[in-house]
Length: 123
Image 1: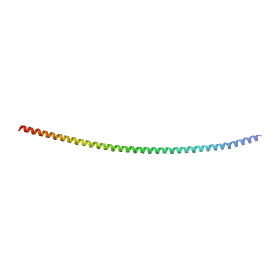
Image 2 (image 1 turned 180 degrees about the vertical axis):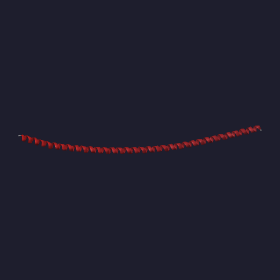
Image 3 (image 1 turned 180 degrees about the horizontal axis):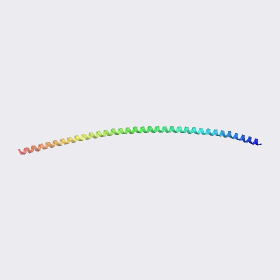
Image 4 (image 1 turned 45 degrees about the horizontal axis):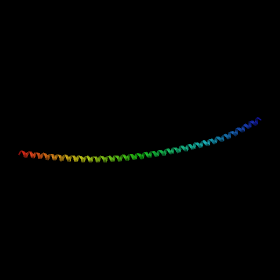
């Protein structure tokens, strides 16, 4: 009877061992699948991050190009404005010089006429 019970316990232990190994193998396969899925998701996330970084870099380059163009245009306009202001200033100086010359000529004529009149009176 001892042998029968011991034999039964041995068969039961072997049966549980093989069943347990099968479950362990299934769990190991599931864990392997989970690791593979996680690796795939991580790879996709890295690709998405790289794409986002590329887009951000392109946007930054475009913004810098636009800013440079705007600055160049503004500098050109400022140069044109300064040129126009210099022309206007030169014309005002020229007109002022003409007025001063005309006033001086008039003053000289008046002085000459007064001198002539004074000489005529004295003679």
